[in-house]
Image (cartoon, rainbow, N blue to C red; front, side, top):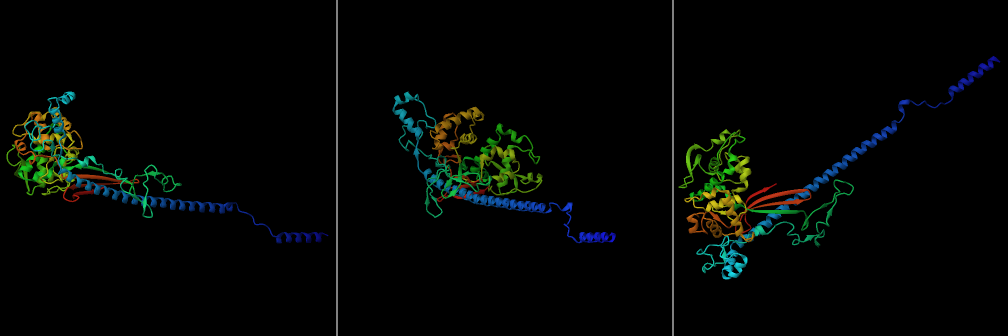
Length: 478
């Protein structure tokens, strides 16, 4: 019986060992598959986000390149249209216009009741030639009611995309004419799902191109031409006197009180001599002649390059005329303070025979023009009085009945003479052909800013009028 029990136990043990059993799970292997899936999803998300970001950047770059090209050619279109308008300006300059001051003075003289009603009986209008001068009322010869000045189209006309919006038809995708759409109704969206690219942009449409351009035209001959310092004696003496009287004004003494970045301290006359030595052909330093007799610059015995030897980077004078206004920065004695004060008063682009235009709105240039026509042999101490100069400038501006019409040299000289200032005799003898001031210009600066989307491009060009669309003497793109 005991043997049967022992046998039975062995059988049970053998069956227990032989029976299949489930494998035991290890604690470290729990959630590995889920973790691998999460890591894979995260990596794929990073890759997808990087691809999306790169696509957005490439789209933005492509958009900016497209807008940059549009802005560039819109700016060039503004330059071309400005040249066309300046061509008409030259044609208008050849036509005399009515002298409205003379016509009003004639009306008052023939109708005393009207003059009494206006309170102008017996008064001389600003800019009206006094009796006995050609062009005055009662002087039959020489078309008394006409003036040699002309309509200033470049001041009246605003060359931009807004003016030409209705003149240039739009073209649709099929090449046909499309109806013009206003800026308020035309909207652009890259992607509504992307906040950066999905913002709505409104733009002005010029023809078939999206964008706009704005043009600013200025008269270069309303500034002092520095290249005339190297002209003939009759030409150089005019510019030298203009620079001496302007730079030595007490208002600009602060420009020459301190040393510049190169630890150099110069006077106003030193800067004028430096400009002359920069453009003349010799290697000798010049001295300025303030006597008013003979050549305004006398050749000296010093080296004109001596001042540049003290610079950290030495160089020599160019000995040729200025090609651009930025080149003036290289002249000995010229610093940032000096150019900040006079950059808008200087030019180097007009012809050597061009005269200072008296139709400027700059009070500093009007003051220079007044001093240019004054007789140097009979100096007037009132020219140093800013209050008196301001009174004369107000009379000149009052003589311009309309801003669109320019003033003639004759009217300008008459206004200056009416204040008691002695006028240069050479100007009185030949008002129209004198070398000091003029009333017409042939050189203009055109600054056009083209914009498309978020991109802007600016082109600055200087145009000298000729029989065609004008000759480009300066071009800069920014």
